Image (cartoon, rainbow, N blue to C red):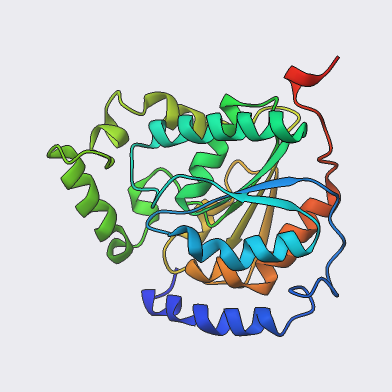
Amino acid sequence: MGGVWRELAAPLEARRLRASGIYRWDAAPPPRPGVVVLVPGFLTPRWALAPMAGWLRRGGIRCHVARVGLDIGCGDALASALAREVGALAAREEQRVTLVGHSRGGHLARACAHRRPDDVAGVITLGAPPLDHRGVHPVAALPAITITALGTSGVPGLMGLSCFYGSCCADFREELERPVPAGLFHHAVWSQDDAVVRSHRLRRGAETPVEVRASHCGMLVNPDVYAAIAAALADRDQVVEPAARRS
């Protein structure tokens, strides 16, 4: 893991993306029709996922951005809310949903897969950090430490210390220690250039680890990441009715 300054490369990655055939779907395998839910990472606003959402929609994918706010709340509560959202979406679309989670959004996506296995086709995580705080750069961890301290002191809507070490998120943490349920795929996209998360921890437990050249923040606008997502979506048949709708 290099210096945090590497994260300044994200605008250059976005420029490379706009100039790439992947972005225009000229150099990407056509995806199978399906439904994708993008799950934002820690302190990531919904608009930051707009380029990826627009790209998926141009490829014929029905794409939704999960309503998890800035992803700074209790992990268990956010995972439960995501599971309800995914369950309702899968029932409405009559298809299983593929979850694409960036950073902490990858945690929520994996937990959701355990909670709604009949409504999830698979999970693609982008730079999802390990549960161990030592796997994250100390500078990058400062905002999380600050928010956790505020949540522990009683500020509502924020994660607290018990989310990491107490009973609050015990089920959530246990879900993240296990592989996704049998029959679901898990592609873990990771990069040695990730300046936020220790790269050797990013691919643990994944069915298919995929290495790219990208910064942590730049994964949302990186052509190599988009190519990895396109390959995963082209390789999986997502047109599957949820269990509740099957005869």
